[in-house]
Length: 356
Image: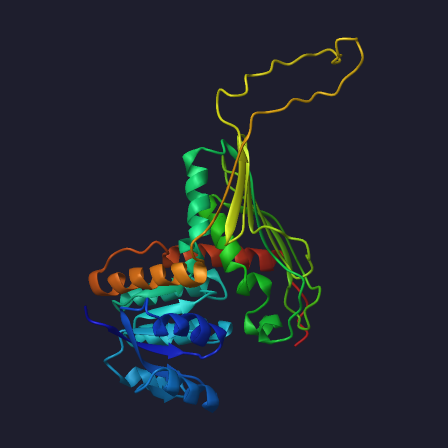
């Protein structure tokens, strides 16, 4: 098996601690990091130690002269994802771009077209679709075990503040652009990326952020005949104990990336109750509340791995065979573009004042 030569643009948290961690792990059987780009000299020196023999540059354009690059990972600042990816694609480079895919749907569509026109691959690093907890919940929903799903709540909440570049609108930042691709992507996934999906309500606000970009978001998605998707991304929720909660006519599932709990009923174990129009009474004729003890089943389990290990490994494995054999991937650029369409709509519905 031939290892593919990789160039990484950016040695921040994503480029170094997510992609880099995978490349340095025993799970990586497919790639060899040959080039690293970062404007910071110290980060370049660290990269040279992490990837012995690699060449480092302070400008990504240096990569355009090399013909031995099989894949470029674009882990630059969010507002640079589009222009850098487009330049690389135009020069015949396969590109894996970090989320967000682009600032708007136009940029996403343009990158997909540029990739097609130049016979190369554009991929978007949305590995949460391959995380064990998401895949389990998706399969459970499809199995019918929880009945007809009425609502799926997705919470990416905490109680903390930020003051880095991810708080600035001019950097294509804020909670919805930065964190949002994960919960919004899962929400769209639960709706099977229905083309009739609408943003039926949204609100963006600032709470603890030091910048001018959102750190509170509420987004409701709906599609005909599908459950309501209730998404929340908040920096001021100190008591959120789940990431996903599914409410169906036969039960409820609550999950974090680490474990799930599920309570449900089984057909035939709780006989149908017919409606009684009169006030309910006990055997003495006194009024009583309408209540019963349902036969319920409970289960819980932990997941083996997260989006950052199992999801990343699976994503990169699929990408290898996409690049070498043309095989389709679970996560497509079209899916990532649909996520940006939602983000673009939410920002259009909730313009925040620019302060920086």
